Length: 220
Ligand SMILES: Nc1ncnc2c1ncn2[C@@H]1O[C@H](COP(=O)(O)OP(=O)(O)O)[C@@H](O)[C@H]1O
Ligand SMILES: [Mg+2]
Image (cartoon, rainbow, N blue to C red; front, side, top):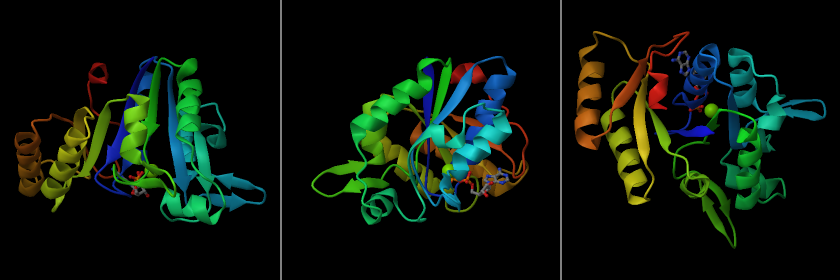
């Protein structure tokens, strides 16, 4: 089973949107691709159910059969960092449960896309134990796909995250620039500078509202 761990320069950058396009592209190409997310906060309550919006979005877009709740290990209602949401709901995120759930999520699949929460320094647990998203990626052994915004501020954000990944010994397979406008000189320069400063390839650029991602899937 092949896998990729989608992270970003921050929250709301487009991890879920890009993940949905990637899982859909894989499935359209005949690959049994699935989705897994370790922890999600800001779930929507429907009676007794807590709906993890990211998994629901990807399932809807890519036509996944599983219920969204089955694709996420820890689901919290409060839209705050997972470590805080967990603490306030009386839960503690266990790295070994995440590793087991990830293995199960990918067991029957050909390709597993893991979507992180926030960025690499997102805390999942800060009590007697410390667990950050980078620790989760390290434990999973997945290589990273870094989603960064295409516009102003992107060089700083993308290079900082790439440098931190390197410092942590994590491999970044490549970068996806989201909200990219072809012909926009700022976006085009950001793409060149990010490649030059990180030494990593921009594997795809995705326009706002894009319905597909133009990426050689073999690179994943
Ligand atoms: N390329 C895009 N085109 C249209 N909407 C987008 C695009 N990228 C992100 N969005 C929207 O922006 C918001 C944040 O994106 P999301 O993928 O949820 O970010 P993240 O998963 O990194 O927190 C969502 O409402 C999402 O649908
Ligand atoms: Mg998301």
